[in-house]
Image 1 (cartoon, rainbow, N blue to C red):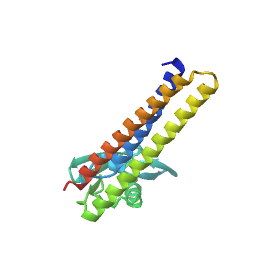
Image 2 (image 1 turned 90 degrees about the vertical axis):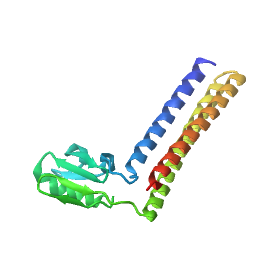
Image 3 (image 1 turned 45 degrees about the vertical axis):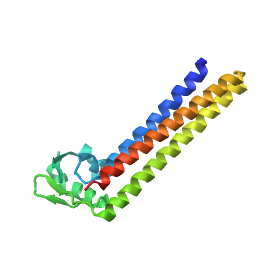
Image 4 (image 1 turned 180 degrees about the horizontal axis):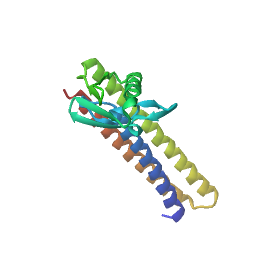
Length: 187
């Protein structure tokens, strides 16, 4: 395989890794019954007039499988942090004891579990679309190499490799979604 085709393949794999890593981070935000600090990653808090991620104004941790605690770095920020959590539409209700926020994570209902499965499948489809777009970009790069005089048999080898890599990444995404679905549906 030529050096140019290898560069196309390396770029293609890097783009696919980014897509899979993004999917993993999105799936972590979908709660599966037990409390995790990453559940609050999407929460934004008004901090001196600027919207700031919660992890930049407080320490988020879990004390057990059903409880998240939020320790604000400045005690006067507790109300703003609570407001940010409520406005994030995560279905969580923080309790302020003057020192920290305590969030009891309610058990998931069957209907809510099904909604979360749908959401994770949608994230998987989004990742697959990204993989397909990466494949199109790689094929376009191979076409450009062909137009620049690269032998057609080398281009065919490159196209076959791109298809094989695409299939493996799509299969990996399917595995991640199946695992997440099992995690969500586990009572």
